Image (cartoon, rainbow, N blue to C red; front, side):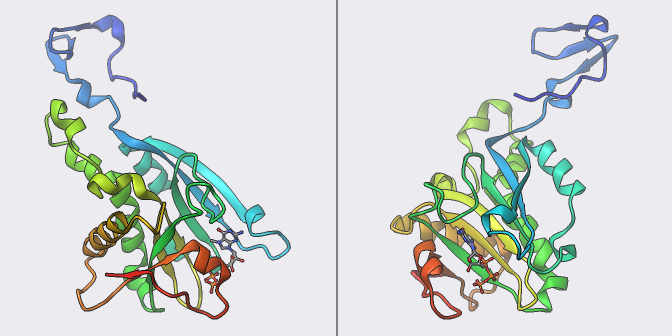
Length: 234
Ligand code: MGP
């Protein structure tokens, strides 16, 4: 597990029975310096549209993290989506899954797609993207902070038993309208897909009369027109 340096040097502190460190008269709980682990390691990717290169060559890995603290450090270091040039993407995927249809863990899957209108870049884009990325891991980790350590492993990620089906999330910054999507592993896992869709829609605070659709990557990759048919809608 990654740790940050405790504030005092080891020579001036002595472990006490409950795992705290005694510093002079003060007790420093491990909570003060141990970073809060996530259930998965995540990779953040950036896509910049350079037409002289292939789609895959335009994709760059920025960084990986597996603690709440490192997520925020990275989040605070990078540009907000709304400041990116049109044609750029961020993708946040579980470590080991490349953010493309071809990856073994994506190829039978699909995405819950939220399409935004032009005004929503100013109003909603950054908030929705933060909410989307937090959903996968951070939200629960933050909740965990107020829960006694012995209960930590009982609490799942935001999508409960279906978190394993989540592969990652993508934001596409486009002049025609930005898009945010959560990618899942298998469009045939109806229960997982619909559960994730319902939780996602609720977390974004979308009105119930507004629907979002789920499309398989196979359909998206072979579409001929501008839209892909929905396999599910919530
Ligand atoms: P896009 O970037 O997902 O959406 O796909 P955009 O730019 O809004 O375009 P639209 O077609 O949805 O209106 C743009 C193009 O990038 C696709 O047509 C593919 O050529 C390529 N592309 C996108 N993705 C996600 C992949 C992928 O996973 N693998 C490969 N090989 N190409 C992809």
